[in-house]
Amino acid sequence: MYSDTVNYPGQANYAKSAVSQYRDIYKDGKYKNYNLDKSDEGNWWVAVQNANRLDSLDAFSCSELPFWVKNGEDPGVKNAVTPEVLSQLAYDRIHVPDTKVTLAPAGATKVNLPTWAWLDSAKFKPVSVTASLNVPGANISATTTATPESLKLEPGTTDAETYPTSGECPIVNGSIGTPYIKGDADKIPPCGLTYLRASGDNGPYKLRATITWKINWTGTGGSGGDLPDGTFGTTQDVTVEEIQAINR
Image (tube, rainbow, N blue to C red; front, side, top):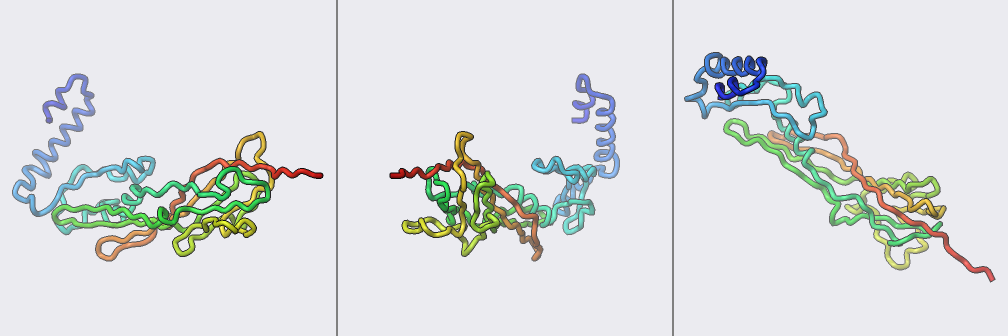
């Protein structure tokens, strides 16, 4: 490997120098013939960047070359794998359902007509991902869970009223909003909105629905805690029509 790298056509001098230094450490220096008879006493540790967080300064905070750590010892470097680090890795792998809400009326709605909004409670339940490190002498894990907390409705126009007034519908008994049933037309929905003006020639209003997910984690040794909330949303078109009346 050393010969192939150094003698590769066009290889830069600094690259050759780096390979030589690397070779000195692991062949003739600190780790000469290291751990040939110690494979069950520890592990090699190496820095690995999280591909989902390459824009974070912490992604490149470890400049250590691969190093040997005995079983049970602290690696002694920043951001070494711990249950908390694994919880963040699990967070990056969480996939939550799309946030498209069901509306009633389902097609075009009318000016001044309350529009009910809700989400499929069977889909919007806590979502968990577990990340683990399982090697001799280092068996740790963390489970990160996202739990839906509230739905925020933004009508896409100032000519609208939301229910509740804040536009934020709480999760109640695992349900987000209440499905419309026949006979509810004259009621105010617990989660929904009323448009006060037709969408007109400019096209449908862009209704934005965003769910806030509370994030927490539990890990090896009774560790655990909270991570920053996650907000995930989608935009959907809503056509609003005037109610036509005939005067006699």
